[in-house]
Image 1 (spheres, rainbow, N blue to C red):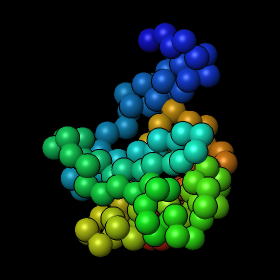
Image 2: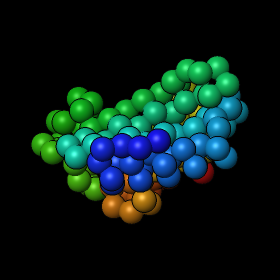
Image 3: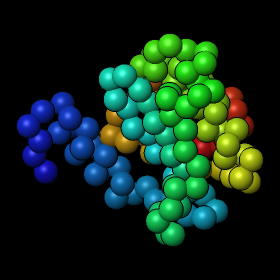
Image 4: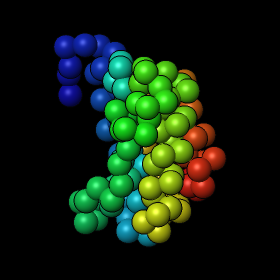
Length: 122
């Protein structure tokens, strides 16, 4: 799987390698992260039913009211808390963390810690 951007290609290869071992079920869905330069997006996915159960991102109204820019660690932590709140409302408390091929550092780490603070277990 080649990509014209070498860094993006590395992310794609890492994500493919991770997804061989990570899969979400109804009992323990997958918490998937997508990071762009300007925003961060997260979904809770049941891979068996191929459905998105809950989603949140830095463009949500609750986040944009507090933070002007969605591409920093502080905003990512709030998105993590928001996804945890929405997941717990649907009865989801345990997930499998899928960092999406991104290195567990910076915004991805802040999102994960925010989700843990919000009550999700992974």
